[in-house]
Amino acid sequence: MNLDNQSKYLIGQIISDKRDKTVTVRIDRKVKHPLYGKIITRSKKYHAHDEHNQYKVGDVVAISEARPISKTKSWRVIKVVKIN
Image (cartoon, rainbow, N blue to C red; front, side):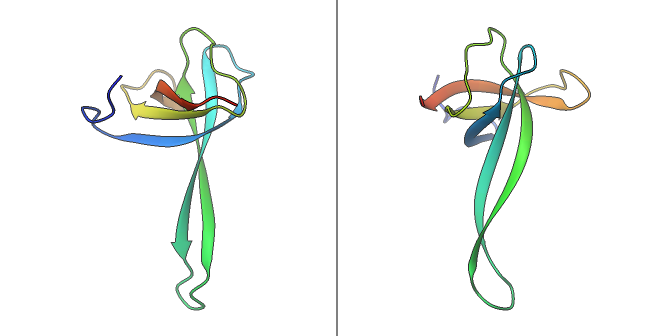
């Protein structure tokens, strides 16, 4: 799948695949501390839909915005970037 035609996508690492048809993806970003200037890694977790339970912990995947699938899940895994 081509990422160019996706409205919004993020790339992150799967940290949990214990739920049925759901993976938890951690997205890391680098920010500069406002006062001291040090580069800090900030992270956020997203729940993404995995229809066939094919992605495993450690895989780097691209996730895309989707309609709300459940209370906490409004992202969908679109492709694997790197397999662990």
